[in-house]
Image (cartoon, rainbow, N blue to C red; front, top):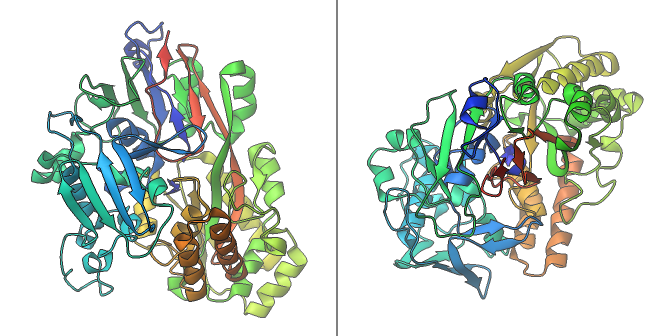
Length: 530
């Protein structure tokens, strides 16, 4: 997820929150079983209207999807009893009976259908809209002409058979569909939500292990407490979690060190040596699937040459930035995929991802160069973004001769929507973490026609992704996905930079804090509070 995903689409943490005394900054040992996690401010709390991992932190606890992920990335039934298909195109979903929303409404097949139709309807402009592009009838809700009125507001491939049965017909076979259903956008919503969606976002009602305590006040703490009527497998082992929003990761780290919060997922790179020393076994390293990329806004017409894009890629010293900014802990990218994803091939990117300033300048000159101001876009979510962007800018000045470079830094809560609206005029930082463990999730969502933010279109790439999606045989699917990856590497509309090293931390008041590499949200249920 861009995820940022991460995200998409950011890493998921099974944990969180401090005592109310500690959250207030007064210190002291927790006695009420509630703990606090520091993270950047969410952008939205309606499941289908966000791709931000900061939002998923909260949504993943308020809602339960039909399918969940085990810690090793395997699909497991959650709100569903079964998800089956004989042809990978028509799927039958049986919903576990007896589930209720936090307001007492029953969870039915219509709860999912209503939420999915709402997210897929183009005029609503929901951030996760394109995740529904696999459904039959998606085009009728999202006409190519943005000024045209959609033919309908209901997906033709979505049919409520009865209260516990949902029939889904996809536009084409898609063997990854059960994994797709783990993505937070596919959570259900109660009928009450649609009476006033604006009010619902301030007080979201889900079907998950936790419910809201109070309303969401922007840039304020979000408190969740266990839902007594929850009947699933994720029953909380604590009395609640508080998600405390920070505009600065450095401040978050300061509060973790001082005991004012109990966990954070990503400690700033320049604080990692200190964190390892101070936290000891409470420092939480992990493998991740989060990759940073530099995307090119091809819709501006200023980055049309593949030679120009490859020149910029080869002018960047990934290993040098890794050592200077990330203490050598990150992994310089040599593929469009991270190592934890099936289909990763060492060295797939070839020379395009290798620092070679001489060849970079030759490609740059052959492309005709770049004229005017080069703007570099990034968010303020991590101080390291500004640090490595400065190094990138210096490299482009020195190695390619681009003199006029300016930075455009945006608040984290605004960054994803700004990129989706294509307001960027120059290269922009994009990251992706695994929404679910599939090469398709990275390639189709980041480079495919439906969801990419670059404005890149390549029929051969899209056709190969479609062939991979249609194959029920994993080895055959990976063959097609890798061929598509080779095309994206050749064209280089977006360049991979490095895979993150997951580096979080916890306070001494909490145990059982496990951070996994997937973007289904930060899950608190397993955490215990001393």
